[in-house]
Image (tube, rainbow, N blue to C red; front, top):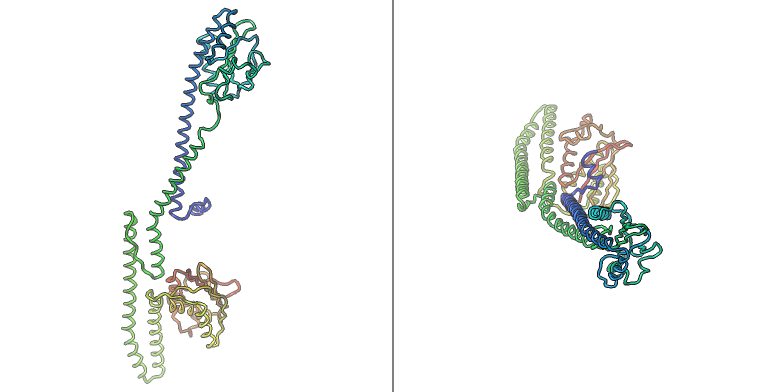
Length: 483
């Protein structure tokens, strides 16, 4: 598979502007993805560091609270707790329970594990507790306190609302349970300073996504403008090259970037040199024609004065061949005269006249198809082109079928005959000047220039002429003329 077919299979745009815009869009999108990935990685690292610092600070406060309550005599512990609840203002909910409370722990996550690890490390370092410490997170709605059959929401307001049921009522609650004696557990619950630190939502908020889309849209709009500005000289150059190929020289403005200016200057110089060459060639052949007509005429007059009839006929025949050779050479150059004005041409009407002319000579030409709209071309050159094709079909095939097809893209004229056709390896050779593939029919007065002239005319109109052998026998000449 070639590079072009791979690009087509992948949907790669064919225009320069489309490819530049695609590359620009992919570049902007890739840059946004990379920058977002870097930002997200930094955001997660900063978040984990903040959670670690926050957890360590909270762990030291919890350790101080545990030290305070465990240092109290057992009889005074509940008295102090009641006084603290009456005063309010504490961040901790503390009780002494006779059993370990079952906690519906939240699913594990990286941030949760960081908090748990920090608390275990600080409590082990400050209090000497080991794995007997129970640390878990719970939602307020299903948090059990005091006993396993009592929920936080069942307690009086002065017990829980001042410490735990404030702010976001769905914020996770950290629960720490430490055995401090036989059948006695210190139960401590608290809210983290950042209630939403365990939320699993993406940091790419709708606002950030909208910002990314807006920046991408602005960049693409700017890219469309700058790309169209940069490629406008290329489009002008392409149109000028196409017009010049059809015989209409059109200078290209030498403006734009330095490279485009150099390209336009080189193209204008090429047009000028080619036009000069065509003009010089036309003048040269005109001069040759003028110079050869006089000696040919003198030779013909002298040949008429010969007494020997056989010699006179031989001289006249050679002079006729020489005259036809000169005329054919001139036709191959001048029949596609690029200075002929382009007008609206009715090819259907032109073909009908050619069919009528053939009928007067006792030959049959059938015509099918209609022309929907006029074609802008050179009428004399087109008449010569179609006449050559029909003459070849009549001479080599004994008859001609002409099919005219019109579409929005252009016109197509197919001339079919029922002759012997042309060997496949010689189809292209038939377009060479002075080439005749049927020398046995020497009675034909042509010099082998018909197809060469016809294709030159077709290409001067931006089209082409192709030959192919018909499966049922005969030859088909297809003339395509784009609008």
